[in-house]
Image (cartoon, rainbow, N blue to C red; front, side, top):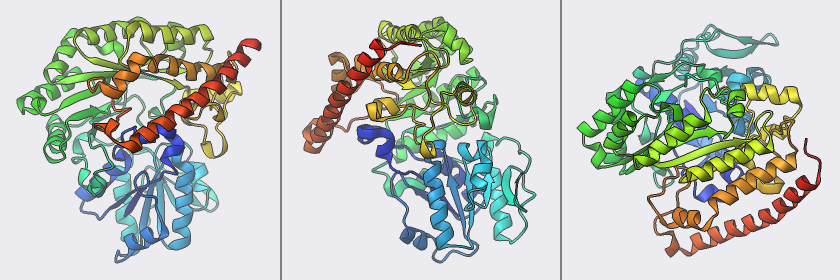
Length: 499
């Protein structure tokens, strides 16, 4: 089987930041590959973030492999168009091949994918077990249409089989980092996903479409084995837990911290994680600190309690303030994300978010524009309000669209309480106003103790490389150009009538 992570162009998504946002391995096709390998199946992985797929590459991968050839494409909303392009390419090159597509976007909109005419089967929800069963049935020439968790076309109608149970993470193998070793210099292997799901109902989170409110996690010994591999084989010294919320299960968190210390891994690597403000206590921070966690990222979302209620965050501004201050008091570097342009949000409430970030003096902050992904309640609200603008082939669905694209960008959603110009101006200027202050720029460029939670990473001794100076200068000139255009937007918003 060939598993593909499609990507049209990383620079389209990240702009000038593409050189400085760490490229981590694609966990979607990675976990699927690891499960198939554990079951004794043959797998090839293709990550277009590293190597764009060509027909020559497809020919080379298929050469010598027994028919029928199976191709799996994993898609988020951001790369669904490229995923379908690849499916067309495969269909033309290998008409008898079986094309499968999975991921969040095909899960929430399976009819669109099946009706594209180039995808044989959509694998919905978590795909490890379903994909393995499909593999065995297809290779054996058996009918696979009774397998749970798939959608397909039959007699002109789309058929959706029932949903299988969620995968037991305790049965998953160690993540197969070795599959991505050929491009080791491009990847940052310092990211680890040790749990899936979250027991909360935030209206903007597309993961709920797959996991619901279920939370599952790997066994502690498997987490430690993975960290040992990352540290002792691949030389990683800074490891980020990508889990949505690392401290959902307190005992599980303390077990991992104890095991890190017992194995001496706390002496070899530093760790970062993501937490909710209402989960932070002095006891938890002491455990994390002892295990050499030095950075925590918070999804703060808003400085308004009313807005937090609207998005069903189930925590308060005061919870976040208390948790962040506790973390800073215990010596942690603290990063935070906010979302601007949420339903019914006023400009005064956006200003409350900005003031909150400055008052807390967070080490790194990003203000994202609200992004209504299919399968979320936010998507349904945006459609109902008439403020949804996904763009052709979903191209507008980028949470960092304004920061990266400036005035050339179309925001995917504008609530009824503001204009597009007001929202874009605030997103841009809040990011510039916070992160481009001289003290913050200096720390980002030269202070390696500043935690950016894996978002921004400049090369070691970048100042000695002429090409880095050119890239950063170009990025700076682009910002100046955006600042001029956004100044016009701000003026236009001020002179207009705000809704």
